[in-house]
Length: 284
Image (cartoon, rainbow, N blue to C red; front, top):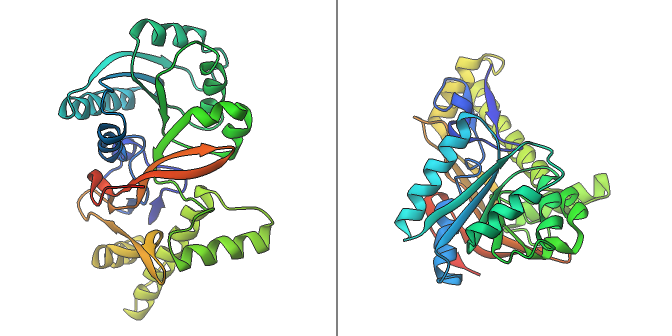
């Protein structure tokens, strides 16, 4: 079975699947993928920030990868990890985490949690007496609803699809057609599955043209290995779409538009945009 994994996210080493046949990750690795560009932003926008605290879901061996990667990037920027707290998915009381943050007195809190959990965290954080900037790995309307005005204090860094400010004409068409059909604004999940569908469509056309069978994994795999680059609703400008490219070795993205964002009153805006490894970094 040929698989494109990445509507919701692709974790570190894709859960051990990275580089395996028939498995391709179409998202930046989460949460680590944006970190090179994120810390380039921090160095420019928050130059006095030197101490970082990690508040993260407990994700088994993936948490060790996360911590190791974070420490490496911090070292490159003359920063240090001054504390951490790992909590269960669905945690509703963050009192213990807030106390650990207060004791560590960081400048930045890296929050690695998803779904509604970041909203629950931020609602408690803004009343905890802590003032370090929280930077999360995701933004969803559900979490924003839980947090309310507390989400105005929340930054996030990932390959976020900003439907309010689409990057290129194809992205604008996607947003307008999605809204016309479903009556609401698409989120990054919708954008990612939409994009993945077009990748599969392109590969299917190539396989059929070559006389192959798109229902056979090896035929789709060969087409993917020949292509490796596709148009994207992320990045680009005007009539020129963005580009998503893949490594034939890791089966992960080597080009993927992402950035650092904040949302005020539920309206996200970009603070900085960049690509894999912080390439093409620009402040907004």
